[in-house]
Image (cartoon, rainbow, N blue to C red; front, side, top):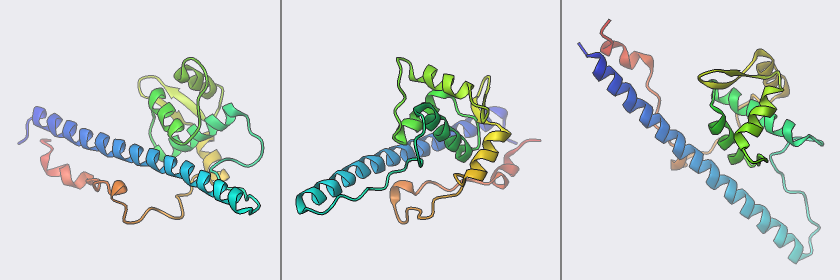
Length: 176
């Protein structure tokens, strides 16, 4: 029979592994964003020097004119949908900035929290952070933002995260 201390130690080790996997994924996203910026610059420079009429380079932005605060909240809603659990404000701000959106103001966490608090699609849950409301889930599903990317990265070791263990793997270890 496993003692509670051993069970806690195992859970902490699993948490550390998942946090490390998340950090690797965030670093890979940052590198991908930096590479996108370089490629856009290369394309624009090549078009300019070759005399080709510049074509618009696709950017992951919404259609039409949207306010900056709305754009930030929309991105937060999308991140919360894919995360499927509450996220604390600092981590949510980091993820939004990794997606290429800057959060203005002296205190980016306070700025973002102010925007989020005025939107019905999200709510603050006291000890754990921000999460989607039913209206937020409906928005993501009806807007088409809830679809998985069509071209996942293949054979890229940076995204080769350890497979998740199912709850069945731990059933034998539970002392009750």
